[in-house]
Length: 329
Image (cartoon, rainbow, N blue to C red):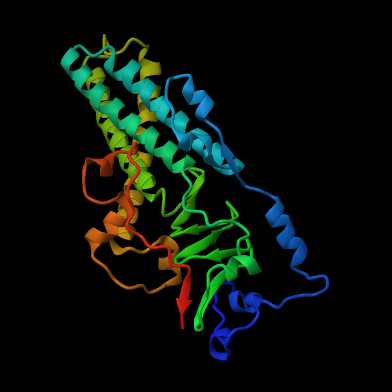
């Protein structure tokens, strides 16, 4: 298997570095894997964008905007754009069909403020989950020089990924879409066009939470408005015609039910994985780990110590994690 450590090197003393890091045979002539590896190394799926010039127009400066992680995946880009369009549709119906013609100004102000706050947090969480490096391992660092620089002692071995030629830290897995090894990888989500890993799991959890909240809120307002319009015989309940209002409400109710249930289940699944300190891949592979408290597991994702910043996608958490890259046998 690709992730199996070599125990022969530990038992027989120092050997060649390539043999310590991998059990695959070394081909001196043409290798059947050579062309496949070369193609993967040359095809860069991940690029780094520079948003600093664009944000400077609005008076915002930050060094992190110079190298923004972006995955060039057509399916993921389409899903991300589709997500933004769905949020935009809900925003349009809620503001211009449900609230702007509401007779009570207090009702419109209250629900409009809550809905827009949660929408802003959902969009910000989505953008941060999409453009944050999920914890990618440096590509191609499993060279003889790179392994030698670790200073391995007798009885210590490392994992090597034969796909991206990188030294794999503990709990890292290779993503076939990003073509990189990701630390503490949970899964690759096309809706955020990115892997969910060590550095962006907080933003993905917040994204599912806030989408679920605005879905439930929009569903409540749509059903209430529909009942109100029926009781008033569709007179003065909307600035649009009754058929147009009905169509908008039906689509909003369907969208709220579908994504409310979907994101609610996803949020519960993610929180269960966070509390148990077990990623989706580790659950599938049934990998056993040393158990730790739920509170410490949550801190490792949302940051330390507990504060209101746990619920903010604008705050970068201080992680409680270790970067173990080799093992003693």
